[in-house]
Image 1 (cartoon, rainbow, N blue to C red):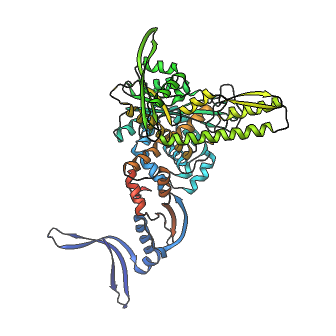
Image 2: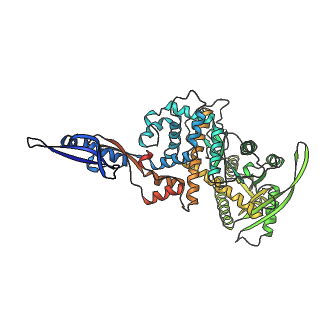
Image 3: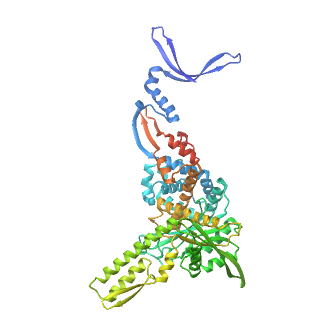
Length: 558
């Protein structure tokens, strides 16, 4: 197919030139012929009115443009990172599942998928309030989204939809992740965190409460958030509890829910830290024939005895060492007494030992300084006693020293048995498990160490995705906000796993930052053609797209 000039001479001697769109073909005899597809009319009029527009239209389809044809450039909009998240969510069939659920919601008359897409992309690109999100949309290009049709009220309605169907959506994402990576739930890692609010305006039934703050803000109300992850650190379920919920009280509810979702849970080992350990929880896990690896506090009597034995067996403090002791344990199931053997495993790390010892010396020196400082004050001895006791409590040293008042000063006497016990725990961590002897003690330690990696990943995701500040005040919207963060965590965890599987040492955050450099640019040509162009893609960016399983973005993706 090509353009052809056709010249015809008039009797006056004037040569009339027209333009035709023609194509070549072979007739029945096999001879080459041409046929006219379109008449553009006189050449001069075509060049003046239509030629540039035709060229610019063709180039627009290709995603290209002649620089000297440009009349105006629009702003460059973030695109590469949002395209990546969008493609991953499509691979997870997330939007497809939303559409299926939407079919039963007859009152939804707006672009639900587009609004949810905008909410998730905002969490990854630039977390903000829903009102600010509308302004943010002007600076980004999200595939298959008409930004002008996004409204604040529909964003809130989209959040209500998500939390209403949380269980189904969450189960769908978990099944897709497990299927895509061909994962089996041999171990489930349960971790918990909190997020606070800048308000004291509360109702009696409010989910926001005062509680133990992991953000060091005990003066703020908060919610408690639990997440269940795979060994690879990919979230498969999450929970929002009132802010005053004790960690230890959440375990049974979570295990029952996971068991309900994933069927037979008996071959899945539950791994969690010492904050979840209580005799009640251990009895519950044992009565349900659940396998577990849980952290154990080093301050318990039985723990101190085991650590004392481990230190005796240990040859030196310069190398790693693992010690195990099996202890009988009794529990009840429906009023019937049962017994089993629990495996207590303690592991020693020489580097941790050195760090613990150094910090111990620093804490003692700080205390000596604080003791002298407070005793030198011109205040009542009772106030000195109170200040010193308060300082010890805030530094976790309240049992280390016995205080008494003697005249105008406070006398401090070290509690040698407590200090010896503290030092005996340097470099050690202690866990207990009911795993069979098919697992050796080193494998049990490795399973628990995986929890640390999962916890670290959870903390990083929490920080990077900015769960707080939260701008919602109703329980339903708070839970919907956390759910949005969870969905974003699933997508970014997939990015991180694929980077790791491809041998690329890079966080998901750095990867998406690199992809964010790819922009969509609006333009207008002198012929009046409006179009979009994608900025250049580097070799490094191509490598990242391939690693995370996304195609290189092209004009057809816009």
